Image (cartoon, rainbow, N blue to C red; front, top):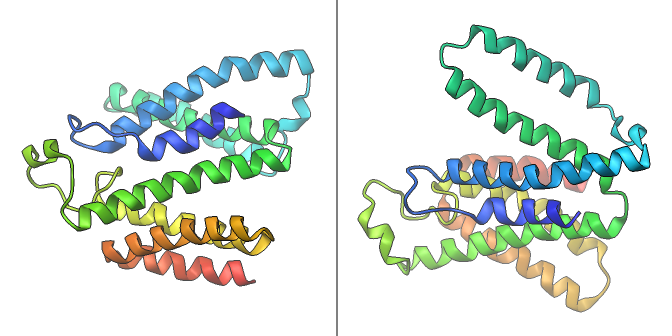
Length: 217
């Protein structure tokens, strides 16, 4: 469970200035974390024999989709790229099954949501700092990069993540009764929202607007 929390915290924040795209770095980090968690999870399943926890409404569609991916390898024009994407999709699917089988207590739901929201808060804070032209000196050597990229490499990726963080932060703000926790969630909403405004990404605002409708429903 702690490994899953690290997955949601580290992946949005990790980057390297020597990579042409941050996506490569994030995919690698996510794959490594899941690779560490996966054998521990298999041992747990074998010892507990709790296989029914893997059943959900998405189990069959995911397995069918994975089978289609494997079959499509025979038609690939680049096995290197295909296996690279296979590793990425396998990571997503493994993470899904680990989550539905391991995350049962409400406290771990809050821990993982908190990790994702904290990552969004830190990425948003970095974006705000970049907006005022305060940044690491090594970025000056890279030309052609958008100025407000934070830890995502491009403002549209950053805006999409921030837009996804705001609805759950608002729901948690409504649910908690402790005043200190309410102030905490206000900060987790205010900083990402300010950064989202700075990115001026219309698609992210459209997605946020639609999600707000579902939140109020």
